[in-house]
Length: 335
Image (tube, rainbow, N blue to C red; front, side, top):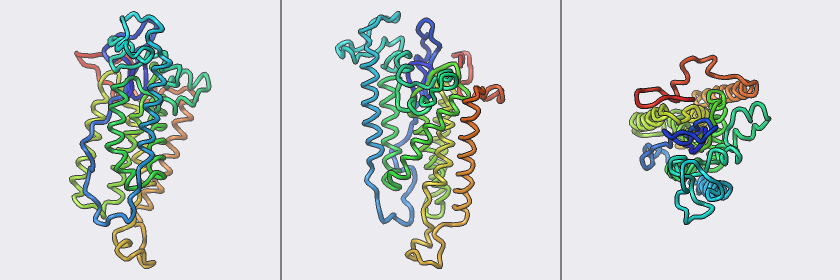
């Protein structure tokens, strides 16, 4: 999700008029998930369970960065047309007025200053680093808590099973992939949030189930659960001020990375204790990994090339804007 401003995971001020002279921001919805595991343990238990440290480290870093956001924002230090700061007893750490940022966070200007995704700055001011920095910012306390709780629920289990060296690239690259797609389609708002990376982990879990299909019990039920969770969260992305492109880009990136990084040996290979006569990986696993790697590399390369050449994805896809917001009698889409 994202918070105040025009951001990728979250759009700022949902249903609230933006400050004078500022476009309406976007925030992305957080992933709603049940307590893990999503599916039963594999028939062949892993010999080694990894101690998760990447996910807890990310959570700590995100919290520290949010505190720094509020220090830089310094609500009492400037006037707001929306009224007084929320929780003034926090002094410099107090939040912008509720009507300005209902997620309890800083202003759009503060987020932009600290590295929110801004198409104009990325394309015309050579600030490509914003494609990464925006994934470490949050639009508000509510946004931060929702994202970090989801990360703990779905990320710790995956890191315990596969370890830091495989989960960390999925998280980081998925967040980047979400930013690239967001930059191609949402060019009038700024965006922040870790939702693209979170959707990447969810996509990787789906790929992991598919590529390691033969070692799981209750496979169909597990597949159904993951698809339902993904569908619900992507459907929530059609609400106004939610950047669903970051979610879709992150999910697709993580899905492809899952085929590459989350391979498990065949049941027969483990059962035979790695005997040379039994292939460690099935042919379909190898083919999926190669195809996924080529598609991911090509997708990121084409996306970056189009983005830095100032292309607008909506010019080539007249209906794609409905993926991030569907106008109704109750709300309008301003992206």
